[in-house]
Length: 164
Image (cartoon, rainbow, N blue to C red; front, top):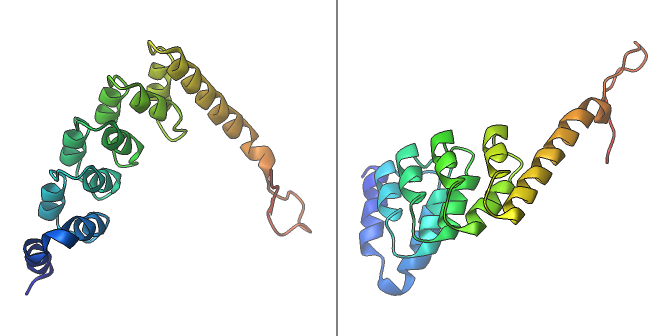
C-alpha cells in the first residue's frame, strides 16, 4: 500500500478520543501528502491549522487560504513561515488584528519593504516596533564585518568569530 494511502487510511480509522492529538502530530509531519495537508488545513481545531500554517512544505495556495483564517494566531503563523510569498505578507501587513501586525513588525526576517510599510501603521505600537526591528537589522548588518574577523596575515590561518 502506498504511503499516501496508508496516511489516509490512518486518518479515517482514528477513534474520536485520540483523533485531534494524532491529527496534530500528523499536521507537523513533513512527509504528509499535499492532499492530506489541504484536508488538515480545514480542521475545526485551531492547533491543527496552526501546524499547517507553520510548515515550510505548505503550498502558497494553502498559505493564502490560511492567511484568511478566523484565528489571528493562524494568520501570524502564516506571516512567520519563511515560505510565505510577499503577496500574502503584504496582505497580512494590513490585517485587521493588531497582534498579527505587531508580530510581523517584530520579525527581523521580513523583507525591508514589508517592515517599512508597517512603520506607517495606524497603531503607534506597531509603528514603533517596526522601526526598532529595522534599526536592529541595520545594526546587525553594519556590525557583521566587525563580528566576523577574517585573518589578513598568513600566520593567522583560522577565522576568528567574536561573541557578543
